[in-house]
Length: 140
Image (cartoon, rainbow, N blue to C red):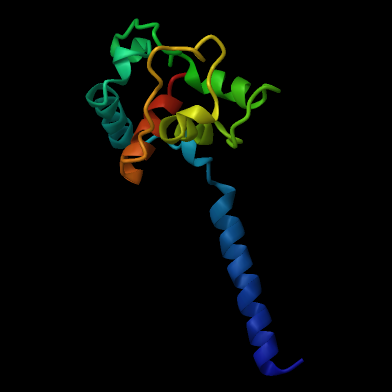
């Protein structure tokens, strides 16, 4: 084996070791709670009038026009494993994100024939969507 090959192999082993070590202590992004981002998500929840349709105890909303967001973390986990789920999400964070930017991907039973559909929030910045996802992911 040439010196260049040995050096390249050594560099690959070091890189793999660094990546493995870095990932060992990582939590999934949805579970990493950043208080500032969560607070921003709560502000956005009000600013975007989510609480005018969705009930959520954390913001004092008791609305029932749309599905409740109480316990959405648990509910999202159940929905993505439901045989009728037609969306593409495989995690709670992905489900919440999908519900924000593509709400027609999965419509909760009992809410299919509403007078008004939930709008898509594709106009939001990635930062704002992340904030909403983090805030809602905390609702166990």
